Length: 486
Ligand code: ATP
Image (cartoon, rainbow, N blue to C red; front, side):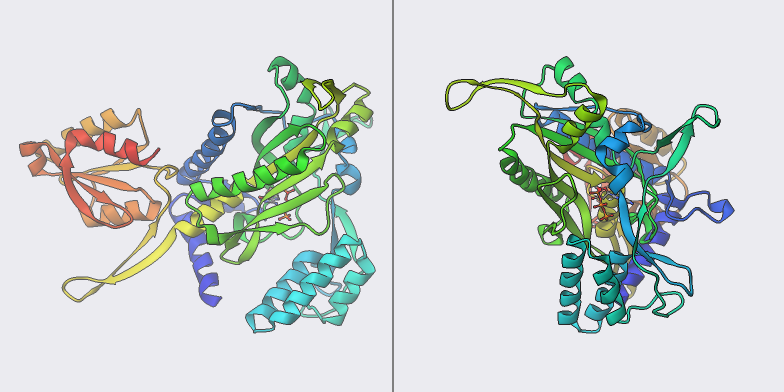
């Protein structure tokens, strides 16, 4: 456990040192739970997003993508239930004034119990918490915290307030800030931009049910407990897809997407044993079934993606609040040979956090290797084993020397490859050092141009994960890399 925690701290430092993630506004001491992606991070994030977008909108011919605005009419959030219900039960410690989400406080305590071998206590505690939260029994939750003498991590006391609810939406004013200006919200999820555009997309795209609308974009939540690096942020990015289906078929599609999404994560190189399903006990007000796809992060099993069967709740609410009819005419024939006719479609949603998926990829990729060399001495390296298809830079092109025409050959290769994939050119430092730098940013292939290249047009290609080097023809480099990154 301690080792995992150390590794996680090392990963965070590595992300900073190699241009993956920086604390937001770091020169002003940062802003809690807000992060910036650096030159390598932004590219990796884009590559993950592109994989998702392709898998949804290109590989499914009944899913289209949109890009809705972050700001939406304020009534949207009344209709969706966010104004009244988007809150978490919180508790404050009166001595430290620190506020906790009650589930996080109890889960943290359960993790501690697990670490010292009290497995049964941890499991009972989590089961009681689930049942009490499902029943909205906040007095019961307070008792659970009191009875187990759960302490504040800062004051180390059990001096708690009652459990209360806090809304997580950020608000601001649109237009000039006058008395009658409207309060608007920064969207806490991207889904509503899809629901309010349901008819626009269905009609202009002549979409036939079942069909999906996909979207990626920023979402904002005033998370009280902001912790675990980019796992829980106040500004983050979601990749969501709402799949519109005929009422009564939602469980079939729910099960379809449940399996499909797990498979997709595995296609990104996440091992099957590191992913599991967690069924929700307490269902959100809009759902008739819900589960999380969890990943085993360095700090334990946590939600990576949510799959929700959202019924017809959202479309019906928007119909009621907007007073516009939001229905679909289904001219397929039912068992009686009659068209299904008009109805409000049901929705199955898949919603994955791009930043959480980024953290998943990075925590799997980060490897600290030590080995004994042929001469008996020890060697080591830190390597990011990011799958080649999403690695920020695919190929490093390294002339062995800065002279003798080697840079010219290298530049020519660079010009040939760079329209097809991201390359990096470097001629400074010894070759071993350059390989290590490429390992640390996760570049899967390095090609070295040396004097032999001038004689026989061959180069050395080095594979990041195995460190194996082989001689191949210069003219084969581009094809080989292209084959490995699809
Ligand atoms: P959690 O229980 O961890 O707060 P949630 O159930 O509120 O998450 P959803 O509303 O289902 O999350 O959002 C869908 C996805 O968006 C989550 O699976 C997660 O990957 C991502 N996500 C949600 N909140 C955050 C956040 N604060 N920071 C980063 N990603 C987030």
